[in-house]
Image (cartoon, rainbow, N blue to C red):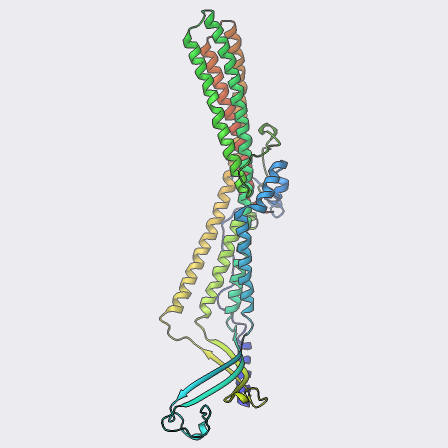
Length: 488
């Protein structure tokens, strides 16, 4: 390497160091989210805002106490197909991060053995000193022959783009944000999966309870039908009484196969979520064993930014879009590259590995500046900024949606507590009405129609009570999911 080449390389390196602190694009700053200190309808001590806790901090294995339910959730996390795909997406994104890190290092390639052969006219060379070789002949070729020029070489080439504007750093920043997005996507899938398993299991308990109500009412209606038949035989009532009583019995009977069908379908749905073939699901508890507490700690809205995977994923998408703006901007600025090559080169094969005579080397440094590219680079930069604006809107929309979900879940839990109290009173009143109607009917002071009406009211009120209990359990799961629980 001559002195001029060394000086050129030195100047290029110094220039790159002087402007290395320059960075394109702005650093990420979280946009305004408009979050309040509390959710609507909740009161939190302002002195405890920083230390406020909520149920989302509870691991799902502690939040759900039923052993069968936790077993189903654990199996789903391990075997669910969506979870498996999410893990593969994490591995794919990890490869992109590794590639972005490697971009800071020179690119090196080797050509282990290469030859070139060119046939040129004898008038191609300006003088005999230019050097030419004819296969099997040295000296001046005949007039009617072409000149054969051959080269035999082995080389190592290196190219290094200096990150003078921070383009590579922004690319790395964007790749890392996308990598973290895949983790949040997996968390979001797990959160939804845990909630879906819990809701499905609670639906099974609800269907079991409804089936028990239907079977109990069927037995009660059958007993009433036997009494009406005895009265018909005694001439106290007509055949119409038997027909109406039997019709009421069939209403209760028709619920049983319908509920059994729903139970089988719900069991199969749970098996699908756990990645297994259709099968039954064992239940270790009944719906009546579950007792709901009246309130749950919801924390403060600001905690959604840390707990909710979809909110974190949306913010990481904004980070990646912000980094892409810097990358697009850097493409509009000069690019400084250093290229070096070296190896063995000879015109004759017998001289190919003649060291040091066949050694060669070269060093090139250059700065390229795009001048006019059909507005392509400017368009890419403007589009990147608009994509960043879209990502910011998406982040704010996700945050707002999360707050609304939590608020709605809190309202559901509060109002379902009131509905439960009313439903329990309805059941107690309806059961008392059935008891009194039967006593009056046996003593001849009430008609069979009054008995049928009382039994129908009892059936409906008991089914409604079961539904309210199921909605309570679902609302609990909904709040847990809305706050970001389930991925820990």
